[in-house]
Amino acid sequence: MDKITRLLLLYSKLIQGEKVNKLSFCVETDSLPRTFDRDIEDVRLYLSEMFCNEELIYDRQENNYYFAGPQRKALETIEYLFIERVLLDTGGLRADEMDGLLTHLAENCENVGKMVLHEKECITQYDEPLHKKAILKMHGDLATIITNKAVIRINYIKMSGEVVEREVIPCAIKYDFGYLYLIAFLKTSNKQYPAYFRVDRIYSFSVVQSQRMDEMQRVAEYMERYSKGITQMYGGEFVEIIISCKKEFYPYIHDKFRNANIVEDEDNTVNVKLNTFEDGFIKWIMSQPVDLVHVIEPISIKEKIVNEANRLLGAYKEEQKDGKEN
Image (cartoon, rainbow, N blue to C red; front, side):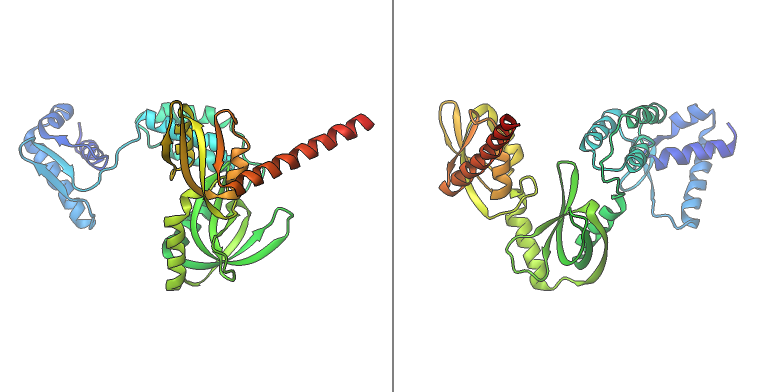
């Protein structure tokens, strides 16, 4: 093997995080140990002249050379397939953004050719969201704003199509049912809880100023006390609720409400205490099988569930009545 090819092979192994054994490399490249030593010195010289951060380490016991610090490692096939499945099923990205993201991941897999081909087959079956908005960059910019603790002014497109301007104090970004949401306090409001803004409806934003200390504390308190209580991106009061559910249903409750705790354990049922925002909880509980889970307290939540059920019942009865008249 000629010198250039040999050096490129050695360097590519090192930057990919491999530990290069001197004897094994000499056998692979049909070269002498002294030749290998000269190649290593060439690599060290290159790193020095290019002011690279990598440090070439020699493990005398194993007779290996490797770069110090975190090493880049290709995704395993099972890792890629898992990420691909989750991303495709969320359906949150425009088709071209999803294709680009998955292609980039596939190109960093162990079996590049096979995974890229697999990705191209899968993306043909992907159904993009109806809004068809590019959100990758917006998400990245908002994530940076949250890290930098800034106050921003957003131009937001409401469901009606009206564009409104809001000054907000960003807290976090959360995914729910196919959409990404910016969770943020309205700067001009004294409400205890933040509002939710769909990221695909944020037309643009600009930085207003850095957050004041009291605004930072407001965000920190929300993230610590309330962020795990969000259900289906609806607000309302943050309340403590006790529900009763079958034991086999509890793992689902725990995964849905990460602050859920068992307070009473009976034969085949458990009573569970959780803290959540009431509006989202009511919409969630009404979609669950009543023979598996129901609310014990507070009474106010049970009354709101009854009122919502009666409202739905009335609407469908009205439809049946109109149908008979027609």
